[in-house]
Image (tube, rainbow, N blue to C red; front, top):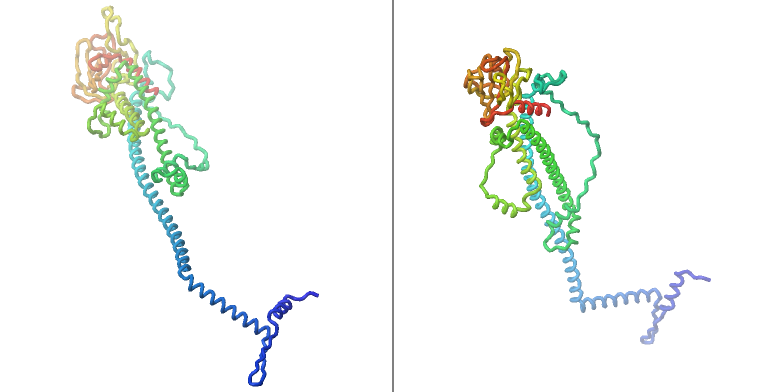
Length: 466
């Protein structure tokens, strides 16, 4: 028969604390005191509690110093841990503050650098715009080339080619479809560069790798990547500008060679005014050798943009002078609307009066009496009157060593000292002087050397076609 736990507990207590009776005899009388198990358990528990308290108090009294020392050590350890964490937080704050200061300094420098390069590019593009306008003006000057009636230029023309102005057409650019912005990633190179720049000297690669995971470092690295992309786009723009300018310069030089003109001389004399109108420059003179030493010492201070910009600026300077020179050369016929018959060209020919071989210093363009004669370029009249075999003649000085002559005229509408404009009527066709019929004898002089007018007409036609 099983018993309950409570019954078993009471049975155990009865075994250790049975009913006890104590008899006391005093002066012939006997008394007894009975102790129940409950009372005995209570007294035993009380005595045990008192004993435990005495033991604890004794231990506290005996080991008081050791206990206090242990507690002090524990508190000191906790304080060390707290101070270490506080130090780590302060270090992280200082590191973050240092990163922000570094980022501010780096991007201030980058901003100044980009602003400087932007100003340089803006000046270059403005120069290009000015050259484009000058080229458009040049093409308008020679727009009449499409109406030549001479045998060299005779061709079938459509209605659109008979005007005096050029119709400029802008190519339509199809709009690109909208695309989602690509997910940008930070290059390992930018992270490594920024992490290495802010890591303490002599730090391990592991510390740099850990620093590269910092959120601020990653932000700075992302901005570094964007700056690098902007720099590459600037260099690419310079490359495009250089290629376009080089092609145009090569074409213009070819046109001058068509006119059998010395390119460098024309640029220096005729186009020199444009070169002098460049933006203000200066600085001390450094010999070539010393300049090379300084550049070698500077080394990393010169980037791809500065080298490319120097090349492009040099090309644009030459192209600017070349474009200006092209606008200051007579490349159109002096006959109104270009309607004439070429009766005699430049060079050796059989003289119409003597029948002997002789040199002809200009181009004869025949037409009707009173055909208007136009100035082929803006200039100042230096002579107007009779000049021996030339008959009634007009000489116009255009500057830069360029001079034109219009001979065998019937009438002259200008006098010496007059300033004439491009395509201004200066006289009428006649047959004065040593002439067999109504025509214009036209000459072009450069540096006191007579040139072939037909070559200039060819050059003007090339400009018009371009």
